[in-house]
Each structure stands twice: as structure tokens, then as C-alpha cells.
Image (tube, rainbow, N blue to C red; front, side):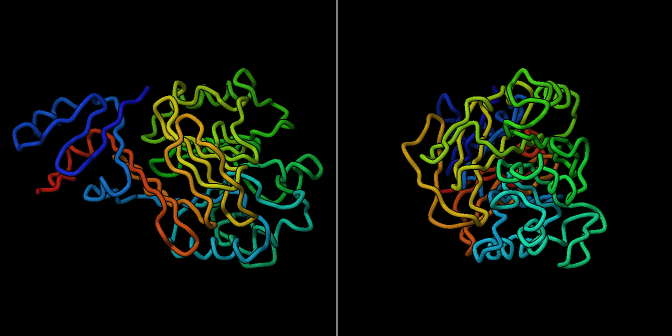
Amino acid sequence: MSSFLIVAEGCWRWWGGILAVTAVSLLLFLNWLPQNRVYQAEAGLGSEAACIGDVTLAVIGDFGDASQPEADVANLVHSWNVDYVLTTGDNNYPSGAASTIDANIGQYYQQYIGSYTGSYGPGAAQNRFFPVPGNHDWNTTNLQPYLDYFSLPGNERYYDIELGPVHLFALDSDSREPDGRTAASTQASWLQTELASSSAPWKLVTLHHPPYSSSTNHGSDPTMQWPFAAWGATAVLAGHDHTYERLQQEGIPYFVNGLGGRSIYPLGNPVPGSIVRYNLDYGAMRLEANTYCLSFSFYSRGGSLIDSITLYKPDFFANHLYLPLTAK
């Protein structure tokens, strides 16, 4: 299990207590930081230690509906000038058909899609759009329109790819996945092996069905509660429930990100580990990553910041003279 550091005003707040910071104690503290751990700063508290990414990613989920909310979210994503777009599934409503896929996806995101043959533009010279399949994508001819439309690594249902300092592991969490969806499946064995062999600073897992969720519509999916942290994942991002939620499980952050444009679901009582829940409007996540830090931020389609969290490697603090300390 990872350990976390919360950067608070005028002090470093450690899970077990508070350490007041002076010039001397700060130097001692930085030398003491375990080098094999990741540290975490909440929104607002770590704003002085901004994470300037070498790569910027957008994450959208449950979006493919050719609707005004989808257009608004897409415009938000375009305004960020991102390097890559990731999805958490349900890219093509209502049933994953070939007749709707270009209007639902290409109309809004063609400039990121490699080998694009749709009717909304030239596409990308290299693929910069990395989806995962959702249950709606699977509803036509065993996912065939999805497989035909995208050009993805591996078997295209689940795959991995390095995006700068981020190593992405995209899963197929649908029950129709031929290689299974349990923690003992062929797909899970592949993930465990690939995570263990990756030397990337940040290892992100994307999938559709959320291992943990506080929505009353679908809620947590126990089958997908794989030991992601123990296998080496940095964070897990899912969709399926049309909400935004940030949770903490097994020492790493989990996200539900399903407000990409289709509809909005209700929230129920928070499940254990839930930290932030939101369902007032559509939106998308923006990720900034470099070797030393990775930030996750969720924005509403109007551009309002709803939630943000940043993960830091110890070297971030060792290589920055100006630290997030506020003098009172």
C-alpha cells in the first residue's frame, strides 16, 4: 500500500500526525522521505507545487451520444490542447452500431483518431485516441464496429501503450470479453505481468465498469475489484455510472468518470473510500504528467474546476526549491 503526504497550509500533514516546518526540519524531512513511495496533495492545498506536465491527457466517459452535452465537453477538451484523449467506455450509444459510430465519436474527436476514415475531417497522423469498450459498444456484432473504427495496439479490446511518462493499461471489463473479466482471467494475468514489467513513472488503468461507485444506478462492480495497487497500478479510471467520483482504495486513487455527454445518474450513500462525488453537470478530466508528478482534475463543461489531486514522486520535492508552504 502506498503512503501519502497531504500538503496543508504551513505544515506537512502526515497520516499519523502533523510536523511543523522550519528551514531545518524541512531539510531533514526531505532527506527522510522514503524514495519508493508516492505522495499526494489535495486540491487547493498543493497549488503552490504545480505539476507542469510534459504530456497532457483528457479522459472522457459515457459520451458517444451526438448531443449538445457531448459537443460542450468536446469543446472543453479541445480548449486544453491535449496530447491524447482516453475514454472510460460507452463510446457509441445506443447499441454500438456502425451506422452511429462516426456521428457519435468522429464528429467530435476525429482530430485525435489515427487511420480515420470517417466523414468529419482528416483525422490524426498518429493515433492519439485511446478508448476502452463499454457495454453499449458490445451490443452490435461482438464489438465489430468498434474494432473496425479504431486502430489500437494489441488485440484492441485490451492493450497497453506508453504515452510519455504515463503507461496506459486499457482493459475490457465487459462480461462478453473472450479472455474473461475476473481477477483470475487471462486478461488479468496479462495485466499483472505487464504492470510488473513496466518501468514507467505512472501506470494508469482504464476500464468501463467501476470497481467502486456510489451511484444508485450501477454502483460498485465486485468482479472488477482486482488487486490493482498490489500489481503496481498508480490509479484506476472507470465509467459506466454517469457521475464523477474520486475514491481511495488500497492506497491509490480510483475515479468514476462518466459525465461525457449521455446522461446524468443519481448518487446514493457514499461507499467506503469515497472522497468526492459530483453529478450536477457534464464534464471531463484533465491529466498533467511528467516524471515527478501527475495531476488529475475534473472540470464541468463550463470550465469550472470541481476536483483536483496531484501525486508526487519524492524527487519532485528534492528538485524544487520553492515548496508549497504558506507563511502566516
